[in-house]
Image (cartoon, rainbow, N blue to C red):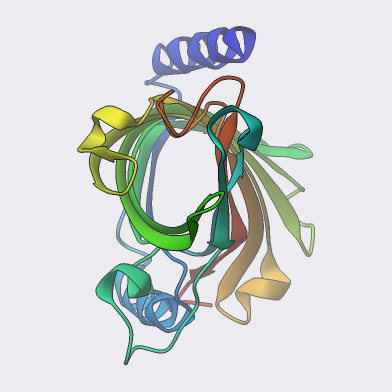
Length: 262
C-alpha cells in the first residue's frame, strides 16, 4: 500500500509541474444506494453537464456492506450484518435507510491528451463524503439476538490517476481509474460507541472501469463499474471487538454519465 501511495504521489507531482502543457481535469460525483434517489441524481447531472462548462458530474448507484468476523468464544457475542445494502422506495422507510450510500465528491488535477492508443492520462486530488447505514446483529449467547442501526459519515481526501485507452477514430474507448482515499470518521451513531471515536481511519482504494465513445455518445451517456474496499477495520478494538477480529466494508456498483449533447 505504501508503494502505491508513493507512486501516485510522484505522478501527481510530475503532472502538476506540467501545467503549461496540460489541461485542467475536473470531475464531480453523486452517489446513492437507493435506485430512486440515484435516478433523481442522474436527472440532475443531466441538467448540469453542459458542453461549455468545465465540469462533468458522474452518478453512482452503490451496493455497500460490511463484513464482520469476531470470535464468540472470547466474550460469548456473535456480531454479523443482516443487510448488505438497502434499496427501497421513497416512502415508508427511515431517512437513514433512504440515504444509505449517499455521497458526493470532486476530483481536481491535470490531464494530457495524446494521439495514440493512450488517448489521455490524468492525475488528481480528490475529496469525498459518504454516509452509510449498517444494520448489525448482536447475539449474546444466552440472552438472544438484537438488530441495531449504525450511522457512519466519513470524509475522504485522496489522490488518483486514470488513463483512457482508444484512438479518436475508435468506436469505443475505456477509462481505467484508480482512486486512493483516506477515510476519516466525522459522525457515528450506533450501538458500539459514543461518537466517531469508536471508529478507525484508514485507506480505501477504488478501481473504476468506464466505457464510452461515439457509439454510446449517440445515446448521450457513458457507463462503468467500480469496486472499493476498506483496507482497515471500521471499528476499533472494544469489549465487542476483541482482537483478532474483522469489520471491513466494501462498496461496488455502476456509474452513469449523462450528456445532454450527443
